[in-house]
Length: 222
Image 1 (cartoon, one colour):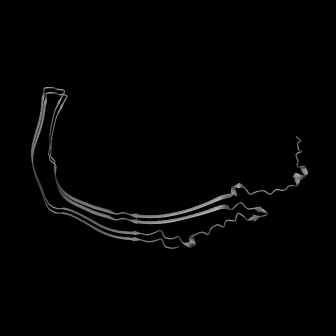
Image 2 (cartoon, rainbow, N blue to C red):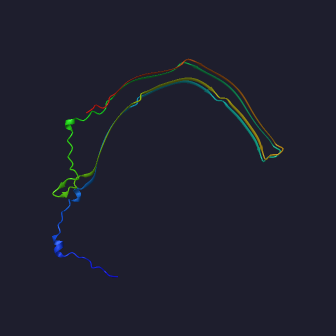
Image 3 (spheres, one colour):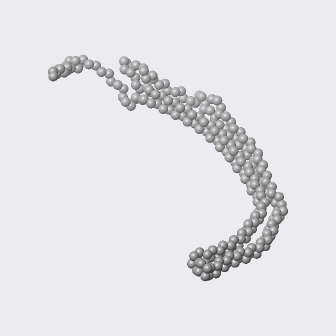
């Protein structure tokens, strides 16, 4: 296999070559991102709540438990007797009055004065040629994002609740069990005698008055 001679550059040819210096790296910008975000949020939520209640609650509880466990030939008895006389009277009114008077003025952020805004700095074209050398000091990618969001939110809430209630829950329970106790007796007796007299004389009134004056201004055009 025959090797070809390598062509070498003579010192004279190297001295005849010319070169142009590139600009410094610190002035080279590939990406220019300018994000201007202006958010104005006006939120108002006045809440008014009134509650009125008249309540009668009665809960007599009677319970008896009897059990035989591993006790053959035994007798287990439980007896619970309850006698209750409950008289509950309510004389009066349950009134709930919620009065709400709201004046809400939500004004948007005023537009900036056009005279106070500085003119933008001119950016050279990346393709501009200066002295025979491409000018790379400009931006290859220029992104400008302007986001202006104005939100006016108003939610006045007014509520009124009034109630008259009679609640009675007499509970009577008896439990009897034989567990592993042959020839045994288990007796549970629960007797309950309850007399409940509940009366309510009156009115349950709920009145909610709401007066709201809401002014929401739009952003003026600069």
